[in-house]
Length: 225
Ligand SMILES: *Cc1c(COP(=O)(O)O)cnc(C)c1O
Image (cartoon, rainbow, N blue to C red):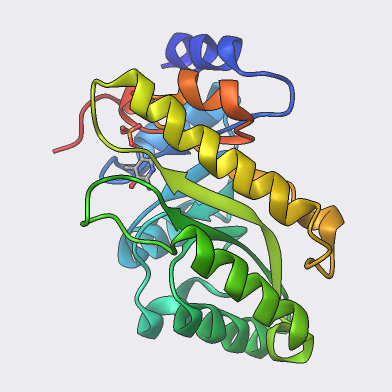
């Protein structure tokens, strides 16, 4: 596993971090990656994440957890005390619930807004127009979102062999990211720094378009069941 992690890291520019997507893999696999130096892990199911957190957080104090999957509003409370970044905010309602649960925990929760760019309808997220609208709303009503911190955008490209399409999709989200960053619509532009793009099959394309977080699962841990 160490060689696989190191190979991926060797492709990443200085500003890009690796999120090891450990979903469906046991805690032993996480420990192995940890011992190879990996610290940031991505999970997509609340129950699985909470179980792993409870098992590992006492012994591995600097483990960092990102939530990357579909998040149901009624489950936010289980991860709100400890989650380091929620990458997959895909509705205003969800953002409001995250804000409320963060307040209960007397913290701010960093979030990314998920942009829907892929051709598959099954993937979630905001359209480019909706993202800008939401950022305007957050800017106009800061007290309503005081317990979230807007750290950037996340996206998934179409699952395809057509590399040209993947390039186009990542490129258009990068353009959107830069437009937002320079729009004057961010109350804390210094925190809007993360562009989460790229998985096992397309992270080498994503880094060419300014990805700062690549979410890599199977290329590290092998196939999932
Ligand atoms: C599962 C998952 C990944 C990792 O996928 P791999 O192809 O195994 O690298 C990345 N991002 C999200 C949102 C995922 O759900």
